[in-house]
Amino acid sequence: MSNTLNTPVEALESELPVRIRSYAIRRGSGGKGRFRGGEGLRRDVQFLEPATVTILSERRERSPYGLQGGESGAPGENRLRTTEGEERLAGKVSRDISAGDCLSVQTPGGGGFGEPS
Image (cartoon, rainbow, N blue to C red; front, side, top):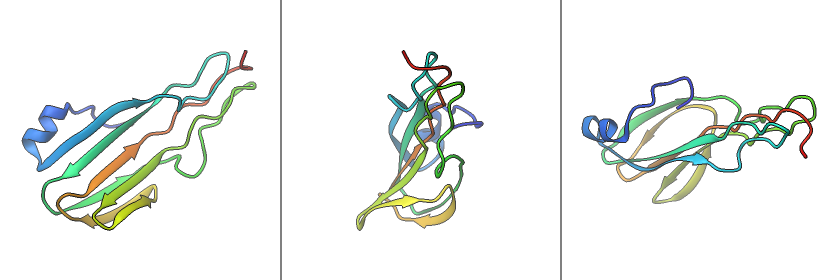
C-alpha cells in the first residue's frame, strides 16, 4: 500500500480469493504541525481460502518524526483477526492463514512540519 501498486478493489477481488472489507484513509494519523503530516491508509483483507501472507512494512515500532516542532505521525499497524481472536503482527512476517481470517494493514501517518498553531 506504500511504495506498491494501488490495485483497485475490484481487480483484487476478481483475481484473488479475497474480499476487501475496508480501504480507507486513517483519519488523524498525520502528525500535527503548521503543515500536518499526510494521513496513512487502512486496508482490511478477508481471505476466502487458506493462504500464506508475507508482510514487509516499516514504521511499526517508531513513528515517523516531525520536523521543526511538528509532531510525529501515528505508527503503522498490522493485525490479524481469526476465529481465536486478534493478534498484532510484526512489521516483517510470513504466516499461513485460514479461510475467513482478516488481515488489517494500516500504514503510518507522516510527521508534521513546524510548530502546531
